[in-house]
Length: 423
Image (cartoon, rainbow, N blue to C red; front, top):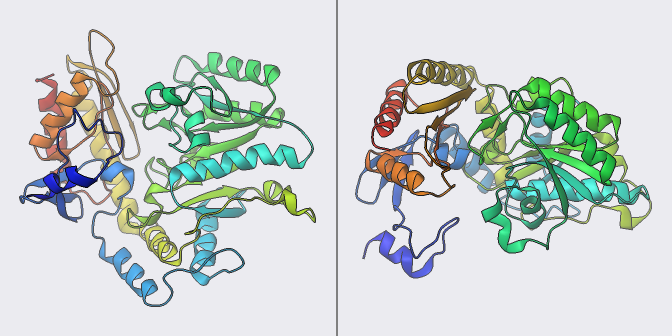
């Protein structure tokens, strides 16, 4: 019995209808941008395994840091205790975060980092004696699968089974080119109609929506409207953070800055689950009180896990290295060249590039669902060709490890172009 057969006996996979899904591919090892299955077949991991492995698989620098930490202090509770790796992570983050971010709170994944941010937004006003219960979010947003994060997400088939059970969320259009004014007016209308506590957004790129992109200038207008109305702002940088957009954070492109930021995925280079939510001093001060009931009562068993902190420190050191910064530029230039090559293809509707993110929308006659037949056909074709890509409906995106070679990138591009002929 092979690994895939054993898997089917015991395991329940994410986002999977097991009755109709093909058996999962059993991966035996990985190195840099490559993975190998149990039969020895090689795959280019062109999406960095859900955007978490920017420095490649089995990265020796991160592995050494983890090993060293494991032999010193693998874990200690963070309630009433602290340790050097957590403090060092905070110090390192303060070097690269927007300068209004002053406090960090550890959790364990992107969804819980959002959960913390939304709870803080709601409790901030509660602590001040003001009742605000509504969160503003973009249409087609995705912020995670825990309850508050799921409520803020707008992809309906993920959430339809739970309608009526969520916190109050009101949506506004994404300010894509040509739709900016409608987004601004919708935000103003929502603020005047509801008791809004916060606005959560994926800055510049909506990942799960199909790498939908909008301009920094438009986001600045939305943030200014929120600031004028004392609405807290939450930048969900779980996907975009740590170099994906070409800068350390997507928020580095904007003039205004959010009150909170959510970080995970590439934080530990794809090694250990960890997340961070960052805050302004003003937010922290609203919880700093003689009244114990005004504290933030949230935590995780593995909050600020020292081993995860060691991985995060190593990852941030790599991110700031000249080699990785040059690789980010190189990948961006390759994407731009492929965009020029493919954008006028008869079957291409649109293309878009930001940093290491490339997206291509295929022309179709009727609307394609998120997990529709075209997506399945494309996914299977890519897997057959030895490339891991997960299309979103009729949108194919590439978000590779920064260390992917030019030859590997060219193979990915060639297979994407070949796929256009079979859809």
